[in-house]
Length: 224
Image 1 (cartoon, rainbow, N blue to C red):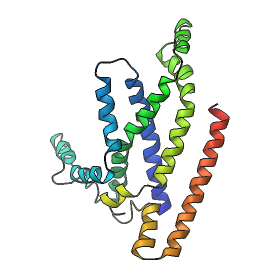
Image 2 (cartoon, rainbow, N blue to C red; image 1 turned 30 degrees about the horizontal axis):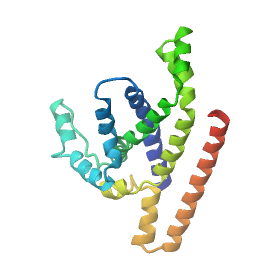
Image 3 (cartoon, one colour; image 1 turned 90 degrees about the horizontal axis):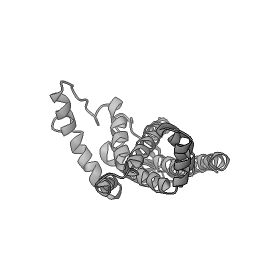
Image 4 (spheres, rainbow, N blue to C red; image 1 turned 90 degrees about the vertical axis):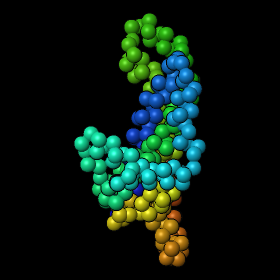
């Protein structure tokens, strides 16, 4: 159950965050007025304390007084009990995590875009390539190393998620958000089963090491 929850969280956060971040980075790369303000707006959650953000989202998710369900009621939708319903608790944690981590990934993608030679875009335009073709044949291949870097670090981070789960749901309801590190914490520091907790930690290390090695091999094969 804990392993499935962790995998659910990883699949829910990593692809979504990276896809949205790439779109935001492409917007950042356009020469628009006030772009530095937008960059600050998106990056601010990244440098804000996760504890503070989680407390704010506790209020946002409140089924009776939270703004999210309030606006849903305005449009005639009955909002769920976000953190009290096993079907919605993990999606709620995923939504908050995507919002918090989006700025960091967008900034990394934006930095990668700055290293794409403009001569390639000019050559593609001369050859008649449209915006989609330029992204497909110039931008995306140039961003592969950046993408692999973000993929590796994001998966490692998602496997180690703890603080936002601890504050938002405390692993509930009915263990629907109980992830590996939270499970380790309960076993080692609440039930004082230190040996069992250490075993879980070693297992987590092994899984992260294996996944990282696989990704590095793929990066060596496809990104360079």
